[in-house]
Image (cartoon, rainbow, N blue to C red; front, side, top):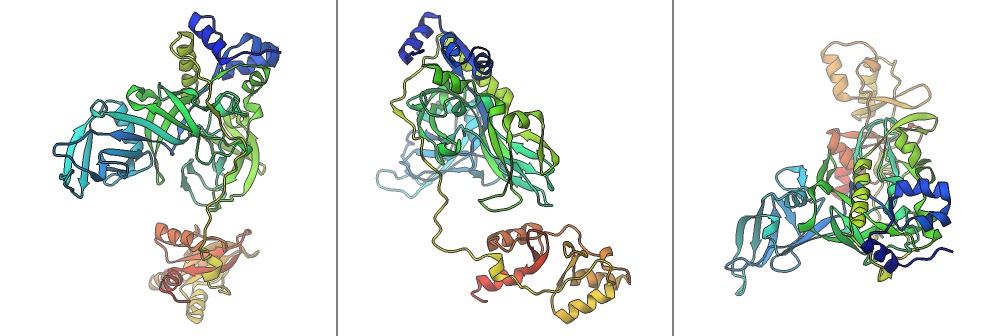
Length: 500
């Protein structure tokens, strides 16, 4: 039985006899030697991940102005930071958006700018007191001008991610990137076998006080991350590091089109090989790590699971969903994850980084709960108009105009012979056709790309779709795309006004 201690491993680091490999190298070693002999051969395994970690940010202390100000509102490069900490302490979150640039620039970019040595404009207001008389200030500062700048990230290093795809007929802009319609692509994140938490899923060596690689500097695990769900292999970490010591190569602000901003974080954890059980876990391969493929075309928290795939399949560039070959891509960087693991390995081999024993282990039995909602959200089925008329695409325009006039509504869903929605025609379409003396069939004037909702969708989703696409009605369809009703902007207006 192989048994080592963290102190013994650190002594090897100090005397230069330590054997360090990356997690990818360890996979091959365990496969070749088995976990027992691998534990004898290897002392430390380095891991790495580099991806969008939205739950990131930094606490900054500016120092006192003269005369002093107790900041109530603070902006850095026009990105608002939370000022409810003290007079000149703020927390800037990676996803906070610029008030002038919107989704093109945010808190993640401010953090990158500071780490890169750029000047940042500080604008602040206060309400004025006897000891803090100043009410407004504007100045420029760099990272070196700050007293403290601590990166404190509530949720980093997700153990694994779900794979995102989209079965709807509309492109979707998400935190996983743009999802093309009709299973046009599948997007994943995470480094697979290099993932820190997959190399120590029982938290035998990772806990509060574990020293880590964080954005090119030494940082620490300070607790389990928010939404920590180890029972589902979706553990997370809360981490801290000194912004002033970080390398801009490993911290990058980013903007996702029509979603918002984030921060790419490079994070690596050294795993001391204390025994063969730890060695066995660090020998995990991409073929052993599975992820669920979720349909983001369904806008609910409990999105349908379309299947399970391995990281080996994901990294191949192709997976199969319902018999269809779907292209895959990653929003994380395997190249940078490897660079994190290699950099950490180099630090340890040079004796610049020693390991720390956790002062407390992380919980292993937590499960993530959904938000408790005391007020029930009205659903589309509670507001929609049912029993509406439909029309076939080969019906004449004149007949369509008669049905709209007779039915006293402005939208007429167009359905195929088996009842599936294939288009929609409106009173405006009819009026325009009549004005242009068109006498053809409905299929010539109908809109084919129809925005729809499900009867179980909250009305907020319907309202957003109406606003986003600048339309006045949405057909309500079931799982087989058969029309069961319609919801209009007028229906929503009545609801908000307290009508029925």
